[in-house]
Image (cartoon, rainbow, N blue to C red; front, side):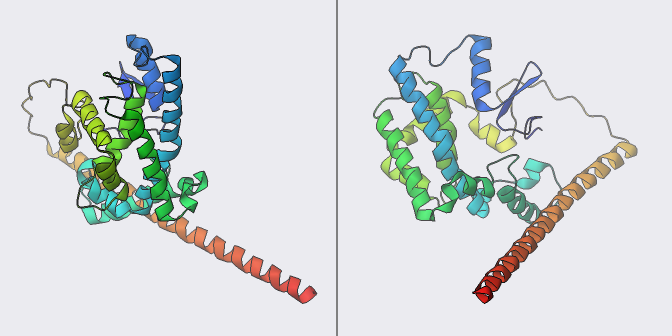
Length: 287
């Protein structure tokens, strides 16, 4: 199973053997190849509103969700009911995989928006209650725009509905036992957004439960009848076991690198602090 494109990006699709990464490029390519423009029926003013709302979602609301994920990695695992053994195809205990996930999830930016990027973007420097309020304001704006319509611009979904769904789903479909203020706000104050995310799910992902259970990227496609598996030779079994062990070793090396990196950064900060303190001391003595 592929968890990212060759470019290291998510989301991505495979179309006729070709990988297409980045949601904006995916939508553009699919619209051109299949001559299906979801925004064809919009007026110029509606397209302008759509552009503004998409910019708000991708450059603001997304970062609020990213902040929550990097700050509470434990809740991410619980909230999305992640079985890392299944997802990664590893024999390592889930406890160890969860620990590895926490290190790599909050520090790396190859698969997701990492903690450093969240801070650099500007969202991460604010207080938690302020960040949640930013997200609530975005949801309120989108709720007002949707009003009592099935989709943002009428009876059929457009690009804005697609982009909004990608964020609404990450907020709404979190296990109810996990605390998440943005989800609670959405349920209590924006019921029309709850209706929207469920309509989009039912329309675009009728196999949603199957996807979440099996992680099958193409569960909607008919499967060929299962072939009778021949008894594997001892050599094949050994090779498979060897590959699995090597995969687990790579994961263990990954967390070791992350720990060493964290130690190194901590030491660098301490040196910088000592240099600054000595500099201030010398300036005081010079006076």
